[in-house]
Image 1 (cartoon, rainbow, N blue to C red):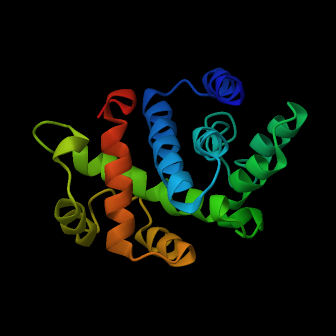
Image 2: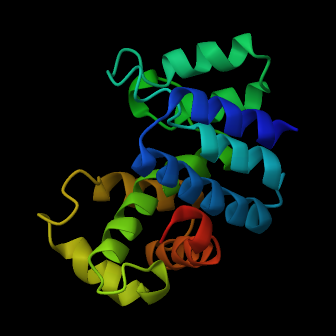
Length: 183
């Protein structure tokens, strides 16, 4: 039921197809990390699905994540999910403490980079993305310029995982979910 409620909220607030696909990619990565760290796959997935649901309506630093947290609290969403969403943005001041919070921060920017790499492939498929292709584009600062490589590195460090392993794990999660994320 929680996932269904989350999907409905996401679609109520988010109309952009690319943002919906991003939410699905983050959900897939979060479920994979829940398996890895012994977390609840549905809860972690919902945190990933909803992490940016308020972005179209509240895109400013003063509003994004804060307004989303307010809305989710009003809808009685679990506090651990609300806190994870708040902690995925450094500017909220909410520190990342749990594995779910750290994973959400770690996968958010990385899913965007991997999707960008997939979209420049002739096939436009994440199935054709590997660690080497991501690392090659990583070095090109003009490629996916809006993706913070520093946040990705910090996320892997906070999770206590090697950066290459982290990239590989998220690629695999996205490949497993390729049909739902449109890649």
